[in-house]
Image (tube, rainbow, N blue to C red; front, top):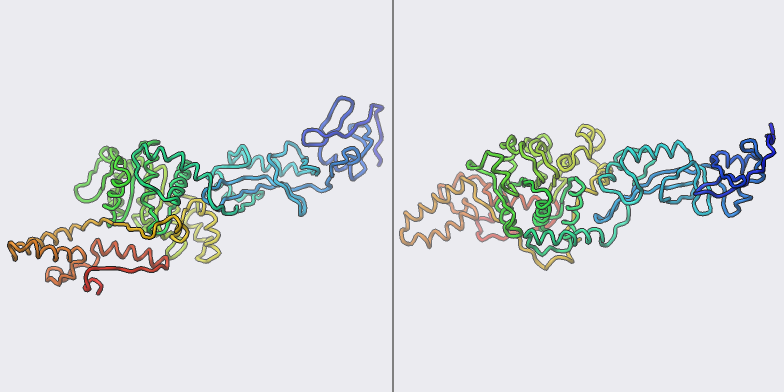
Length: 501
């Protein structure tokens, strides 16, 4: 049935309003639905509210192309592949092969982009608005990493996740480190960081500022410890909460010496052995507590009563099995930020990475049951998981940062003897003293040096049944594990042929 004019009022004329098309009668402008505009343009509709509309929209607005079919709205999350970049949330309008990024959500069911007019599905717009409100995102553009991670895991139908190109350098990280450098200097931090270490500290700082944990997975020899010391220095000023460093027994003394070397203002306690304190009040007097994984299990009740600013796991692959007591213990402690330090985040299976990330950011990879059900040990699963964890894992190889490094780096490692070794050392020293009298110091120098390399090379009867794993030998095997897992080469120098054997 043809529409009839039921009013003698002046006719409507088409007019451009703010980012939409409307109708004008005299001095009055009226909004109109996108569906009505399409009807006027393509279906010969001529009456609006009983009043004549004398032309199609395109006849009056000649520079504007009126598209017949609705355009689709979608969100696009662009995750930076470079650790210095910021995630970007964009709104994309698309129609066929045509697409365009728009700066803000439309306020109606129509949208004008340059010389193109589109209708859009109102329900889609409402759905996106509700989603952004639920995610507590008020504006498009740069968003926090925390928001980006929540978005990427949301499974929202109107969201696509992409990766941005790698940039050679990050202005964001350079700026962030410049801002914290004075804080470090004022707090007594004394280290001339290489450029990649500056970027590492800035990245760790930015992650922690968002309340997220992370994995520092630089290759061995790139100075993970000094980057952690810089991070703890920064947040000592902010929070004033103690930090807990859990490490293998072989390198506790090394951690203490590194703190003394790079920031002697940090008050460090090695918490180990029969004389360690059992009082939380005493622990809270220190800036940093350094302990072993075994001690963390034994003192789980003590450490569980303290609110830690940071918990740092050195050689975090030691919690790759989530069923172990050490993994259960360290994950139970209350802390603001978790940092896993490891050169080998995946050793044998993808569950290794799940367990480490479950410490750094619980629930990021879902429950263990869900993870194992969805992620078989395959290359494709590894690629999919890498996309999720990549924003929270920093890994640089020696080859990548070689231009920043000197020709050779010497990394001394201080190793304490175990209790049994100390007793045997003293026993050997006393035996030499009793046997050689005044000549004992000369004899002792050689024999005690051999003992420190490994007791078994002395061929003494008292060491015949000595366990191979002395603290020094154990540390050697730990270093070799990381080198072999990285498929690198190693040369071992030793002072005695017997040790080579």
